[in-house]
Structure formats: C-alpha cells, structure tokens
Amino acid sequence: MTKDYTLEQLDRIIEMAWEDRTPFDAIAFQFDIKEQEVINLMRREMKSSSFKLWRARVQGRTTKHSKKRDFDEGRFKSSRQKQITHNKISKR
Image (cartoon, rainbow, N blue to C red; front, side, top):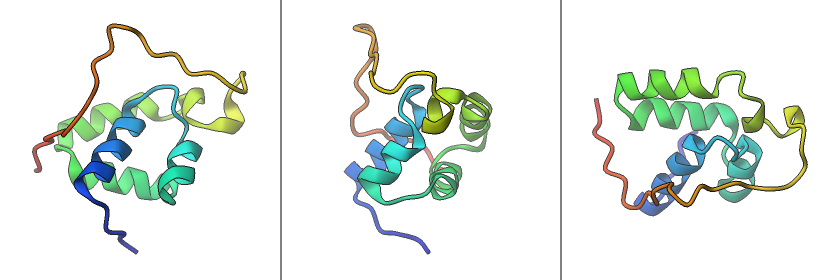
C-alpha cells in the first residue's frame, strides 16, 4: 500500500532515514510507515547508487534499531552538520 506524502514529509522521511541515530521506530511513530516501507521509499526516491550507499550504511547499524541500542535517550547533532531542506534527489 503506497501512502501519499507531501514533498515536505518525503524530505523529512529521507532525512531521518539518513541520520545515523534516528531509529526506524521514530520514523514509524511520526509518519506511520514501517521499516520495509522506508526501504522501498528510499529505493524509489533515490538514484540507484545513492540507495546502495544508504542501504550498506544502515544495514546492521544498531543505532537504527531501538531494540539493538545500548542507550535509551539522546540525540547527537554536530554543529557542522548541514540542515537538509527541500531535498532535490534526482530520480533514476
């Protein structure tokens, strides 16, 4: 089932998926979208090479899965980290 998201929502889902310390549970809570649906969305919205990089990055990453984390709370954001807004990801 494909859900209709606004461009701003899609942008935020993609941003959250790229963030190392944002678990899929947080994306599910905020946007009512399961991990597999996030993966499918990323595959659809990103270039193939970008998707492969992202997938390799998050696969097995403990911080993307709440149950695998060794901490309960907290979010680190570097002062050097750019804010992603109006992401224009080219499609395949």
